[in-house]
Length: 251
Image 1 (spheres, rainbow, N blue to C red):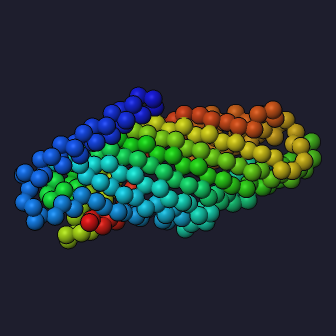
Image 2: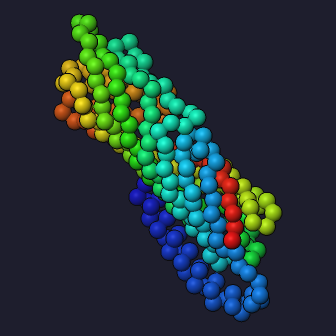
Image 3: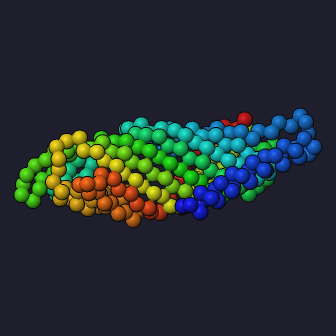
């Protein structure tokens, strides 16, 4: 991940040099009455299904480069919700969460810009951070049949970075649909839970770790949960896949 972040920093530095070169050359190479539409605002469509509202701004530089930043929020309940944990000894209610999302991208467009507008096939690097909160409550039954009710304050952080490939399809002079087709990379997941109920037996955390690794989304990635009675945090690194569809307006 450190290597990816370094590459991203170098890429953004290149974009700033490209902007200076373009400002110098555009005054002599472009007609004075030709408007350069290098700015674009967009809203991610797929994320809205999950209650994520992430507006973004993109600025093109030179003939092929652009930088894009997005910042938004996820509401607790979207059209897609996660069912709770349902183990033999441990059960929870539905899992809903909310929080903020931020990402930055550096892009290279294969085709040279027309009047500064960035469209067509592109590739580049990205970095993304999501921070969420959730209240998770449920019941636990020990091997001896003793019942416990529990309630956790949960904080989840996901930092991801990697390579991306996409295509921005222009629709008229101002609008476009941006398809981020593939975004393979790496991610670090961090979890912190705070028990707001009575103390739980030590074996609860072993059962929780085992059940989480069998739960829905986590079955698809290489997880390693390690919650302990003395340590309410857990973190692991894994592969990451990013994709998105956005609607954009150029100005």
